[in-house]
Amino acid sequence: MIESIDYSGRKLILVRKGTGIVLERGDHITSEQTEYVVVGGAAPRHYNSSGRVHVCERGTDFERSLFPHVLGLEWSTPFNSEDRRYL
Image 1 (tube, rainbow, N blue to C red):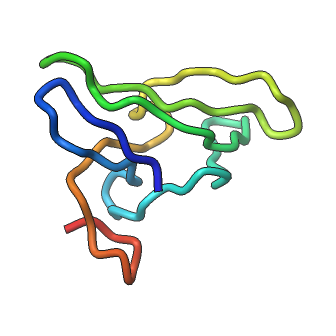
Image 2: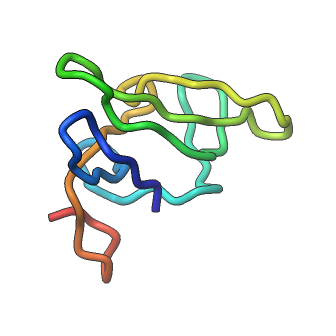
């Protein structure tokens, strides 16, 4: 799971928006026609921030930093680890 601490000190995890499925390092995700491999992320650093997701385009070592909503993701509170969905 990809965890990060936000601006208020809360531990957040990266999940798929709408389903709550938790992202793991190495998961593949597609945006438009590009497939990415998730390598990390950073939770929001201030009130109006959405944080960042660190990805590599599949087949490359070039790391990019994208806003979570670009990939259909969001930062959320902890989850139920048995089914990889947040609470």
